[in-house]
Image (cartoon, rainbow over all chains, first blue to last red; front, side, top):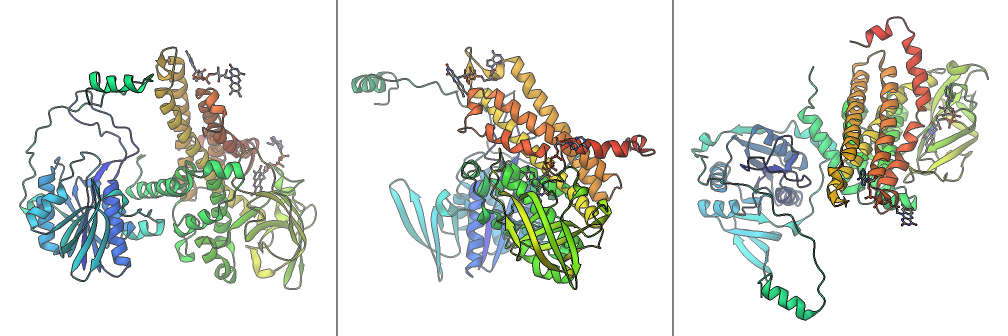
Length: 249
Length: 389
Ligand SMILES: Cc1cc2nc3c(=O)[nH]c(=O)nc-3n(C[C@H](O)[C@H](O)[C@H](O)COP(=O)(O)OP(=O)(O)OC[C@H]3O[C@@H](n4cnc5c(N)ncnc54)[C@H](O)[C@@H]3O)c2cc1C
Ligand SMILES: Cc1cc2nc3c(=O)[nH]c(=O)nc-3n(C[C@H](O)[C@H](O)[C@H](O)COP(=O)(O)OP(=O)(O)OC[C@H]3O[C@@H](n4cnc5c(N)ncnc54)[C@H](O)[C@@H]3O)c2cc1C
């Protein structure tokens, strides 16, 4: 079975986010970038499936600028066999990414597509779902466990009330949650070998997808600074404050 | 002139940062407190490729440049300075074995050293010969197809926990100086080797430092590295890279100290304002960053000279080691100061950074000896003029 893994280049999760002075967007100049942590989990799961002999090939795909090759190389170092880079400098929204991935799916015919449940930059949580709708494949989102059993896939999902297990027929789409696995780190020899693995470059036009924005970003602001807490004297005072000040009761 | 790192460099840096985060950072304080040598983690470092960084590929190493090694050690040191410093010594000693060992020695040891199944120590210093290492007294006397080694080595990093010793010993006359020294690979469990106690040190506590005694220790002739009489030269060749590596550990320490200081100044309030608003402290942070940036340029430049096989690389490595290790200690100490009383207590890592970086000014040649090395070259014809190139 071929597994397709989507990875995204985002701001490194360790970096403190700065908003541009004109509030037009987050400032990305000279900021350290990395693979989205949920995508790392997706790559790890795919590589584990290959190590178990379930997957025969792992293909990593990204949509993004030239520099996003770095993240594909990381995926290759972690164990992906080859990579596809749909190169564009546009700020690509989830729907366009899903359409591009649909194009890749049509070409590659993977048995399983694994994506992060969301990317930590825009936190949209929709690309996987959109891809499912466009491709007609069943989806298991927020996965904390994935098991391939013959032609079907058991996906344990993290939902509000606890865990839900769904059975999907393959080919299918999985989006990863934090507890699915703990990603490995890349080994230096594998980084060197990754340079020699095939990386194919495509453009959105190759898939006939228009990456123009459907959404206008009006303004980006840093969250309001947290004010120091206070100590309340009694339960009554707490209830009073929750009712009358915070207005949550 | 292009100062930008390549994609490869950045990938290696990232891999080292990931390893530091996953395997070192969370444990460094405990290893320090418990004087614990994390052999299991060092083995994983081997599996991840960090133990044969610049050993040529034909011998199973990664064959990376010294510049890449510097970038890697700078990142690893941000996880744990002391453990990373040991990794640098292992890399240096293993590289010497790869460079000058006989094929049989390669076969027996290199795969293990590169994969972390065996660890190495570098044995030059003696109780009576530190800075004046060329005056060392340990003897290696040929007896048939073996050498018999007698003497002792002081301050040996990793000793007692390592498997191989690279030993510099005198094969010439008592007063034969640098030219009478040869280098040997000595299995650490050879009959006649005994170890002193683990020295109680100020820093570098996650690795043992011991005296090693050699009492009629026999090693086969094939264990000699290079020719008889070349040992001191080989030891110094090893140290050129070693100094860049130790300097890189100081860069990592200073980088971490600077990061912690920035964050602290932005959160800590006194006199009704964040410390970051006081110009005196802004200036301090600016100076720390400036000194780190200059040392980093110097270290990477020296590494590059080494990669080029530049005949003056030794002097450049010495300058870089002097500058970067002085800078590393000062910046960590300033960072401690910026943290006020919190810098002095072990709940924060600053005091450990200060303790760990202090020895970088002393070992692999003291910073005074770095000046001796540089000054010696400065009086060579045309050297000062050539520095502009
Ligand atoms: C934690 C630790 C780990 C070590 N690990 C190793 C190891 O793995 N392998 C190894 O071989 N060695 C190791 N060393 C030894 C280290 O390299 C020596 O301590 C160092 O070279 C200095 O030698 P010394 O201690 O004998 O000091 P000395 O040589 O006695 O120097 C004392 C002082 O005099 C100064 N001085 C000496 N000569 C001159 C001169 N001509 N001009 C100006 N100043 C001078 C020195 O700079 C120093 O300040 C280690 C040391 C430490 C502390
Ligand atoms: C081992 C130890 C024992 C101690 N014993 C006692 C004791 O017995 N009794 C007691 O009362 N206290 C004691 N202290 C506390 C000590 O006096 C304080 O740590 C010290 O006054 C600094 O305060 P701070 O730690 O809050 O640092 P901060 O005040 O937060 O200072 C942090 C840094 O900012 C600098 N800074 C702050 N404001 C300014 C400014 N306006 N301009 C320029 N720089 C500024 C400081 O110089 C420092 O470098 C002790 C501390 C230690 C570590």
